[in-house]
Length: 440
Image (cartoon, rainbow, N blue to C red; front, side, top):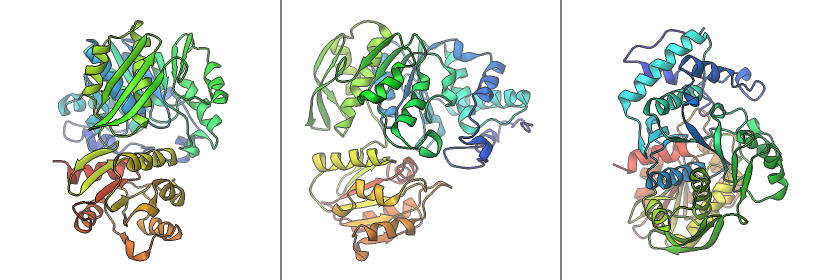
């Protein structure tokens, strides 16, 4: 049975008590890869009045860049006068960050009211939902209540069996496909692509940021009505470093967009911008004025993604949690933040191979490495991380092992000179904990 419906004071505790694949809390084998289902979330939504049918959606999947692309897409739609609902994951500091409207997170009172409604539906369903299923149902109910014109919905994991795959995305967006979450999605890029392709509904427009032609065939097999391919139908013509971000030239089927200032760090963000712009154009069905694009991208922020939160020393936060993300961070540091000795504050989840991740981050370039524990039950022990750093040639005197992210940040601030830099990375859990210390 689902259990007691929470009262007004304990609804967040009720949410946290549910199976959570992100944290690993309470996840029995029957709720892992062996038993995927959408029946629980569909049952919840039916009891909530089938809100997913009340609006159209743009559905986003991919290994990296989903949240940044979603934020950019919401900004472009807003500049067109289409204030969009948004559902992203995970959050950095507060669960409210996941559910938004017109770029602003849901308020505490609204979220608590929605969670109580979902709790009643769960009791009626007679089966315990997961943490992510509950939040998905709450988000979709809120979007229906607000009568949004469109919801930008980010997949939590994979695609086919993700709880968000109850929406019928008019536009399906794929940022890229690399290796991650192999326990759930399979060991190869083809396995992962096949799972992600599950969000593509027959008749939808597919915006495909992945350029491997062998993987593209897995997406086209889903029979989208139209497919827009990166580097053919849309893409980036120019991408150069600018003060505070990137100066990029984009193109879509509708036109060219030169000299767009994107106030985000990392060359990879230009690819996310191209995907977002192509998706917005596909949704509205016409070219978007260049002035609208410029104003929309000028306001984009993506916390925890190569985010600068301090100076003297420079402090950069990035939630790189897989090898591809770590490599992208290293390229960004080399291009945009070279010079000065570097302190890495690093924590991983135990599913990550620490040697691979540390090598991708360029641990050999660091003056010191602070190994900490991510604030998650799935955290890799910091001493295991430190042994991997030693294996890769980091001198013992350059290593610090601490228990918490807050301790790691404190050590880094005390030992890094004012002209140096601190990079906090390895997991969005680590970045969220560091943000709570560093950003007031």
